Amino acid sequence: MGKLELLKMICVVLIFCIAGAIASPAQIFSILGNFDFPNGSGPNVELIQGTDGNFYGTTGQGGTNNNCTDGCGTVFKITAKGALTSLHSFNGTDGSFATGLVQGTNGNFYGTTANGGNNNCTDGCGTVFKITAKGVLTSLHSFNGTDGSGPYSGLIRGVNGSFYGTTDYGGSNTNCAGGCGTVFKITAKGVLTSLHSFDGTDGSTPNAGLVQGIDGDFYGTTYSGGANGCGTVFKLNSKNTLTSLHSFNGTDGCGVYSGLIQGTDGNFYGTTEVGGLYTDGTVFQMTTEGAVTTLHSFSNTDGSYPAGLVQGTDGNLYGATQGGGNFTYGTVFQITAAGALTTLHSFDYSDGEDPQSAPVQATSGIFYGTTYFGGADGYGTVFSLSIGLGPFVETQTSSGKVGADVNILGTDLTDATGVTFNGTAAVFKVVSSSEIKAEVPAGATSGAVRVTTPSGTLTSNVNFQVRP
Image (cartoon, rainbow, N blue to C red):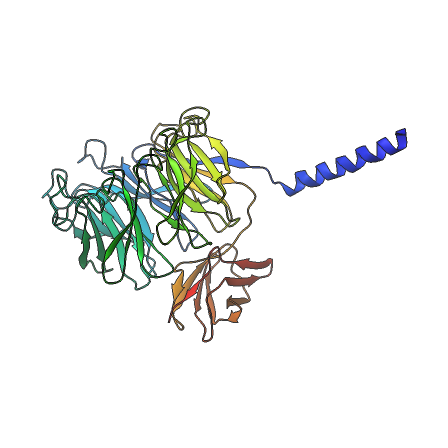
């Protein structure tokens, strides 16, 4: 080969390398906020993005009230630039150990505390509360043991407007000490209905929340119980009939600490805290009929004790592990639907330790999450992770009837010129740079929601289901 030909080849290779570098944006991890105890300690559930574009969450401990040994917990807000504000400090009577939020269509937030409230239980049986974006809290319900005890996960909003959740203990069955746990429904005004009490054989200790499938049924998990004592996956239909879909046996995982998500392929995905080939937990896929496939078994070096999943706009799944990784303090990972896992970040305590929930993807495309410990003061952190995914829009409810009002969340929506539901134009109103209100148009069918802006068209992260 002559020098000229060799030089040409080197140039071609360099061009391809440069192009590849441009096409693969750098991964950027940042610490946005540090908890210092007065503003909270131990954030243990997923953040949510509000209609104002800010992020909201809860901490299990800390705060300014000392009625609880380690603080009763807080509700907080943090901006994308890292301004952290405590909105409320629980005092025990109005709840303690807060466990997550969901935003209602009225703009208020609804959540649960695992303890506090009614004193029928040693530390209180837990509560359901409402809080405004300015921090005005209203207690909606105090559990009494019979109707449940210890809601250790947040609520979800059903398509009918009511909220649904689980309690770890309590209920009408006494097969477990303190009760095997419940599934409940509660209205925005605080009217609670117990839908199911577990009896151990169909599962016990439903530590995670629920997800409403595209079929309208609710799907969830239990941490223990079932045929092998390692927990279950269940379905609850509109008639409140519960069906056990799968009982974990240890080899395929044990102890479902976090809830399910339904992927764009229609299958459900989740994690088990322990079990699998190396007893450090698993990532699994489950069909709607209950056929479970283990996608990955953690081995400590790539993480241990996984804590939930979220699906990114690239179709991949993202999650966190509470331990393991390069420094044993936990990781953030990506996994494909085929089971190929990539560790994106290993915590080293200075930037956090023990992330107890999956990061969430904001409409900017960036992921945001929390760690229970670590950071500047040791009380936990809020972090962001950008991997180069672009902005999108998110419908605040993923389904609705023709004529229903739908909140659409996004970024830089002020000058939006059009909204379509699977190609059908909708009447809409721009509320702010981060929120649009649109009406499901006549003739609309299930599919992507798209918002046209001067900088381009933004597509919803999940298809909107038009219900009859």
